Image (cartoon, rainbow, N blue to C red):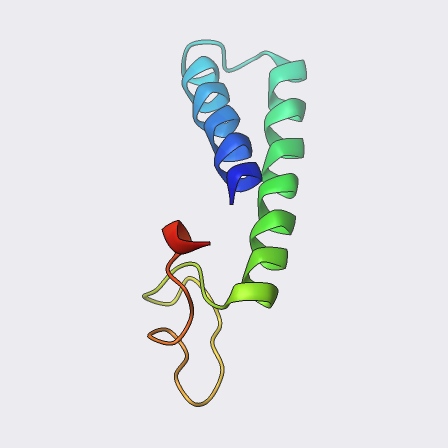
Length: 75
């Protein structure tokens, strides 16, 4: 979870930077790399602990596992 939070923090910062520097190719590449890292970390987290997001943003199992998985802040 800490890795997800760290990577997503970098994504927020890069997003803000790119709002004012949209033509910075290196920053765009770095942003896309962190997007890939974030997706991989979240996928790994969900395979170990269950859904991370609700409302159609994460797959789940049957029976409905959202209420059974530890909440992200409990991991």
